[in-house]
Amino acid sequence: MANIREIQSRINSVRDTMKITNAMYMISSSKMTQAKKKLMDTEPYFYALQGEISRILRHLPELEHPFFDKRGKIPAEERKIGSIVVTADKGLAGAYNHNVVKLEEEILSRPGSHKLFVVGELGRHYFAKRGVEIDTNFQYTVQKPTMHRARDIAGALLEQFQSGDLDEIYIVYTRMENSVQSEAEVMKLLPLERSSFNEMKMPLNVYREEIDLYPSAEAVMDSIVPNYVTGMIYGCLVQAYASEHNARMMAMKSATDSAESLIHDLSVIYNRVRQAAITQEITEVCGGARAQQK
Image (cartoon, rainbow, N blue to C red; front, side, top):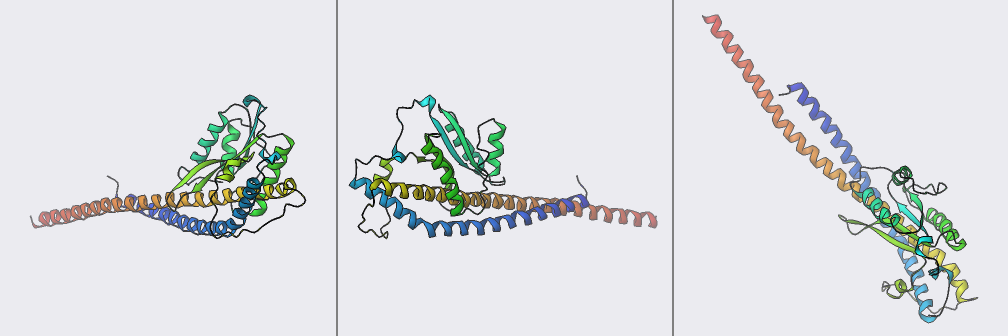
């Protein structure tokens, strides 16, 4: 059995670690709250864009536009597929990064030529080691997502889609269901699906007014769709950022609880060793006193 000094040293070490995990829990809690507020502040604008696209398609069902072109003539083996993969910059977030990487590996197993646009250092290192083609000019961090960053990402992806360098574009991210559950999912950004706008559910408080399509419906779509894609990417970045910190909160809470349990067990062992040492000292004193009496 370890001596008293070793047990006390280990208790102090675990207690110091528990302070760190508890501090990380508080930091992630604050960042998650800020991210959720930022998303709520911007959602109405993008709901409105989605609603206008839906109205245009409803009134002009015969409208043809490059952003809705599925390029069906290109066989599956020759299709160029791009994926935006949103991971964290570091670990200590439970299964958060593993779930995103697992979904992307399923996409990579499909036929076609794949190209990755990775947001987050951890995912970038993971796929680089496996020889997957990664856009090296696409260097973005997941910390503090902004509209400017989302616009830059959308601009790069839209340019490659319009030039024919990409036929399909997906984004793999983590959506936060509630305060205790997050779900990694794949969203198709381009080409746009008409059915997704037909089935869309708009909030009741979004105001609608009559619009004139000037100079043409195609020109209006040219303007609205890039902003819509930017909004979708921004929403995914914020959702992933909030989900990452939510996962880190849960991981740090679990680590803090484990540290408390370990300290309790070590304290019990410490008290037993201490009592045994005291008993041993008393026994030795009593034995010495008897020897002196004799």
